[in-house]
Every structure is written in structure tokens, then in C-alpha cells.
Length: 178
Ligand SMILES: [Ca+2]
Ligand SMILES: [Ca+2]
Image 1: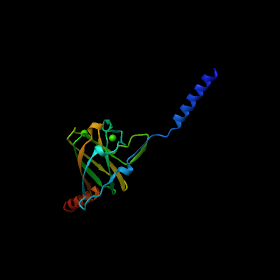
Image 2: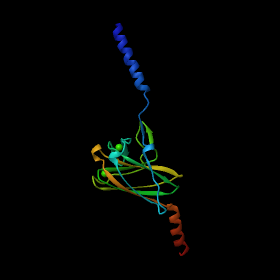
Image 3: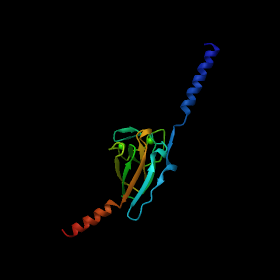
Image 4: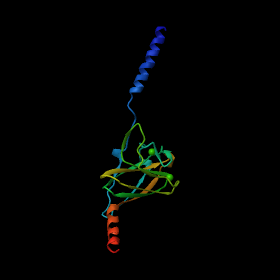
């Protein structure tokens, strides 16, 4: 091996080592998420435009659809134990909804808790999620399929009171008169 070749090989090894040591890419919408505040009846309404959003959610394996290279808006939804929410999004572009439990991931996809992509441009997407555990903040991502698929939208959101409570009251009434 001549000196030049040794130098070139050493350079490749150094570059490969540097590449291996590179940290994974960080995807983070924590600071961009809108904190949802509902009225006493548990409702909230928002209007926005995903074209103004960032693209931190590039892909997610949710119900068969994978890539979402368009921009997204994100909402942070606080849920007490047993609470659930339903979100209805009327969208001018082609929206896809994702519910996830983290706002930052390192070199991987966002976990999928629930998702919806039933309609094309101009359609309405609806997604629901019930919190099975302790009080938690979950995130609703209103994503766009492509950069051209972004657009204005309205979001209607409702947080339902604890399912267990409702069941208990209805079930209890029924049981009491049986
Ligand atoms: Ca996206
Ligand atoms: Ca859609």
C-alpha cells in the first residue's frame, strides 16, 4: 500500500467512525403543540392551517399509512384516568390524524395510539382515544399527506367524562330497579 492509499483508507475509516458516532435525528414538536383547554362541558374548537406548521412527524405506522411528509399542527390534550376524547377535523387539504403519547422521538417513528385517514381532500377525519391508565397528556397530530396536501382546517374536540362513572351511574340505576 503506498502512502497516498494508506492516507485515503485512513480517511475513510475516520469518516465511517464519525458517521457511526452521529447522534440520531431528533423530531420534536413539544414547543409547537397547542395546549388544549376545554370548557366546562368538555368541548373546545380550534381553527388553523397545517401549511403554517412544521414537519416533525415524517412517518408513522398507523392503520396502514406510513409517510406524511406534509406539515402538521399538534395539540396537547390532558386526560384524567379513564377519560377519552374525540376529535373531528374538517380539512381543506388531505389530513391524516395521529394520536401519540410523546412529543419528541430520537431517530424513530412516533408511537401510534390511534389514527384516522378515511377521506381525501376536503373531507372530515374523526379519531377517538380512551386513556387506559394514569393521568396523561396525549398529542393529536393533524398531519398532511404531502406538502401539497396541507391546508386550513377546523378542529372540534370533546373530552368525555370517565366511562366508568357513566357506566356505574347507568348500570347502578338499572341494577337498582331489576
Ligand atoms: Ca408531517
Ligand atoms: Ca385524509
